[in-house]
Length: 239
Image (cartoon, rainbow, N blue to C red):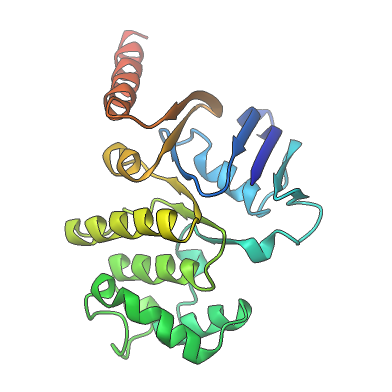
């Protein structure tokens, strides 16, 4: 479904990302972890054709993302609040996204009913603009907006940040259900190792722009990741 070949991004003399090869099959829940500056957001930005690669290419279903737009109907994303439209209400924003993805307002209304528990009565009919919502509720709007139209690939950057514990649990259940029932490919970047390993059947660890681990998730994965970062901290203290 997704093929990454010799992809790199260089700003000036600083190489922020280089991955020789990475394949992500359809229906996989794929977690991306690493410290700040590891290259996670850069990789997602390259995948979504928000920035140009310095070398290499990314293909989605056989289409190079920086050469045509055939892949765009298959992909949706929520990276940060710049993806939102602050002067719209949540309903207006959802209808806007639905129109872009060929969904009628009636279909969008029907689709949104399944998220009543996730919204916790704070999103729909609140008579607020998105910009006036809390950071957590803005995150909820962005995540659900990314699901409209049932895309084949959904990219979420730090989806658990700003969410309260109850909503984090609901989101993990949502991701698992969509992966299993809708055969959606999720790409999730997060600093929260526990949440990421819980919802991902595969974890890729980036460190200083390099792919250093590619792990099929098991009961030992969380400990393996924690050990890696603990060792990194110890090594830094010795420098």
